[in-house]
Image (cartoon, rainbow, N blue to C red; front, top):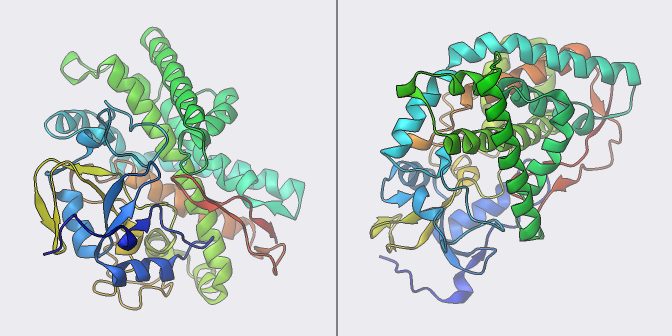
Length: 402
């Protein structure tokens, strides 16, 4: 069994150096070949363990000995310029996490998201109208993939439209890693917390038809604390914006890069649910592939001994390309079935917003294909530049024509 005392020369950089684009297959294949559980060096200089196989990721995501709460404590190893948001549902362990998730989960059921789908569609069509009116070429990121998620999550939370642009800037700064000044990240976090504190206070006196109002006015036994409400608002905004924006734009780029698959989807709209699942598996929008954990007890993972106090990172992007689970995993197959991808995680921290993310992606792609049947690259010879140095990857711009 391998031990934690490995030579420095075996360490790999984290986040891994992946090429700009939705398909980092070669780098993650190299990781799996190098060592299923590899020693990596975090941006803060400290070591951690990175699990690259599907089986090891599936196990670690559900292992109670690998704690998110411990990873949010002062002095814990970190990937970003500041510590994780303590008190957030994403950094709690049971039983605190169990209580909070029970109170929130009812707002994110597949049934409720289906009822919210017309609102998503209305926003998508409004953005498509604006693109069509301006005419080609258009930047799909600036005109559609970026504004859609921020408007959707803002509508869900009850954030006024004039604040959307400020939110986008704060969220971008908040998710910075390599090359981002820690002070910038900290200021963004403080601004987001202050904003949501004011919004929660406003909803107490003037509730509306939105998620925050529902949680603020819940029965006493179902009520969240002020701190929990503010942390939830920050978490949902950040998670619901940049990840979805990168996924939508990255999915469009992927389809444009696979014209036969794109034609098949245009010709068979009923294929969209399976296509969305495959794009969730294939398009790599997470720089690392999951939230850092810290071992609370010694354990074994993939033949490697993890000691209490050591940091462990999932690599979901790598897990989703594992040949032990997916046939020909580096090939885009919009009809792939079964497709047990881990894009939304696994275990108690499986993404609460999975149904919302699926609805956003499907509606976004359906709207674009219906409104712009000739959608294509505006600059066919030029590859889109992708965002690097942050927690979330995605095209910075995607010039298209139709």
